[in-house]
Length: 293
Image (cartoon, one colour):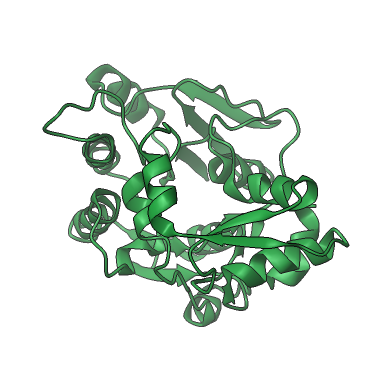
């Protein structure tokens, strides 16, 4: 197949492109950070520009794997904050993906299940609904806490959160934790996520959504301790009030205060239904953590 991958320069996007290029022709879109992967064709494009969309239509791909997503956007005003700008950009990108008229795999997020409402979660829900109503063949996958190794010769513009966490566990005397650390995640190895996408593309898109996580749900404290165990290091954790991190996030371009405020929402994603549908059984974090350290 000839696949068009949006967000090809992101951490998840680059890993998917690398795996997919073994058996398919892959065109990876990037905006500012060029994709440099063997066997992958990089293409600079802005999904919001008409002339770029025309060029993408001319590629005549077999399917689009839509991974590109904004969490914070530039150009915020007093009436619209950075997370709302990002939500608007995400909607524009989905407009362009749908306009191509090709089968779509959409990398969504488990945030769609949150009880707390945020612009990011709303944009994910809206994009899922519009894709499902489009009449195009589709697959929606909602990963929980993707992780995996760094790729040689490729550096994502935004540092992957698990890599930052590993550096903290390895080098810091104390690891700061937001809140009580008992909120749950189901860490998903990025290669398992990529394998599931390819399995569905090759057997046909099922026109439905799946949550996808690793084999076991873990508290955030357990995630930290598992990384510490892989590094043969006993970890000291310092639990701090969530409100403190929310305030700090207001002054950082890399963090969204609304997402920090919702960090204690569980993000579990039982892969049982997905495994039955495509045959991919995601690994346990205690196995996959070795690729991080």
